Image (cartoon, rainbow, N blue to C red; front, side, top):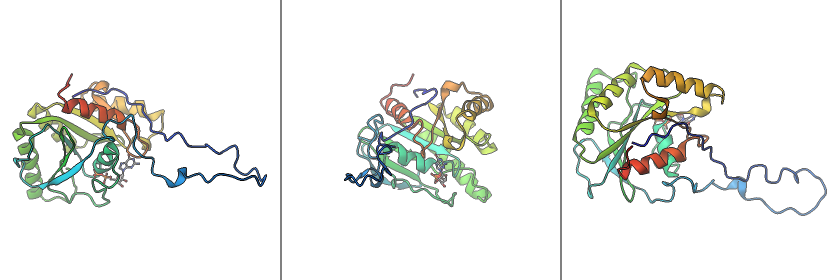
Length: 244
Ligand code: GDP
């Protein structure tokens, strides 16, 4: 999978502060109504996924489910509450596509979304504190089954919360990913929670903790848009088989 390095693409709509000079002038002059505050930012031309149609195919319990047509698959995986649904929504520019939840740990299914050239596959979140032993074993079986059996699995986007050191579940997942031999990209979420100066320090610390080079990590925030177009480009390249 393409390794994105340090992502810097903060998304702006270019309208902020547009009328700042005119506001409050008290001149009584006629002003045009500004629709900007009422409008959704809309598609980002730097994000190659925003221009593509996307369709929810279904939720499946069987990792060997057959999907028609067969296309490359890019999987998303991470700890419950890591921000996976929010990032998926930001990547494709559809705020309501994947359900953002305040109560993690409920999903045990693989959610398939179809784009013209590939599927995005949302794997259930792991590490839910109240999960039973049986549920954990079932989860492991689902994920290992998925990683082993999908002949068109082209890349795995592995999400980690930038604020936390890797948990024992993250370490276990890293091992499963390494054993699977699938191309993977580590993606840090919720970067907006850190200050600009804390960010590079944290990325260095996490890279060290994970035994990865900093180029193997992408930094994102679905709230600010940081790194989202860059990750979208990495995904498109991976789906097209342009792994480097
Ligand atoms: P999931 O369980 O991994 O799918 O995570 P969700 O997308 O449902 O997000 C879990 C919580 O984290 C929600 O309260 C989100 O609003 C919050 N969240 C997700 N992404 C971000 C982000 O980029 N920045 C911040 N500050 N919060 C986020």
